[in-house]
Amino acid sequence: MKNLDLAQRVKDLRRRKGVSQEVLAEESGLSLRTIQRIENNETVPRGDTLKRLAIALNTTPDKVIDWQVQEDKGYLTLMNFSALGFLFFPLLGIILPLIFWLLKKDKLKNVNDVGKSILNFEITWSILFYLYIVFWFSGLVGRIMKNVEPQGIFLKFLVPIMILYLYNIVMILFNTIRVYRNEKTKYVLSLRLFK
Image (cartoon, rainbow, N blue to C red):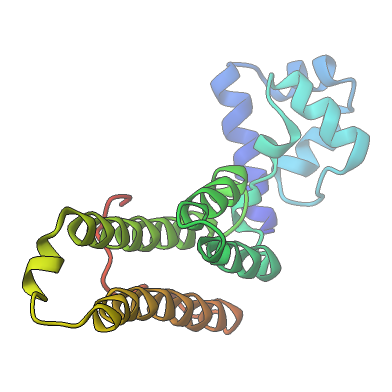
């Protein structure tokens, strides 16, 4: 966490509330010198001090401390791996990353961007997957393959699905490695639904 950001954040929250340092000290039960040291970036509030400060500013400790600057590679990696839920049921590839994204999008660095790229990719993949299934069973694909023997039809049905699944797995693993290396994710061939 950058202490300068914290000091500025406390000042901004105090000013938005329209109170002086003296009034904030009185409402929080902290000394005026403690408030001054926090706002001058000489100390970082922790524990009870942080809690008192948050209550006096009518906010939460999470809002006082800018959690956005914290980074958790483990969480980002887990969020990427959660997209593998599509292996059990195609929509789980959307639902699980969505949950991870919603829980921490404003609290951890890069979760918002990585989450959006995963969701864009998984939604695009699901659309392609279900469109293929609909086209197949509606007979469009069957009409195209009139001259193929029954065993061949089954094989022709499975091969595109296997390719779709393999592509999804490769993209997830590729981007998980990129996250681990602190590189930007690149989910190729996805609609930009979340910007």
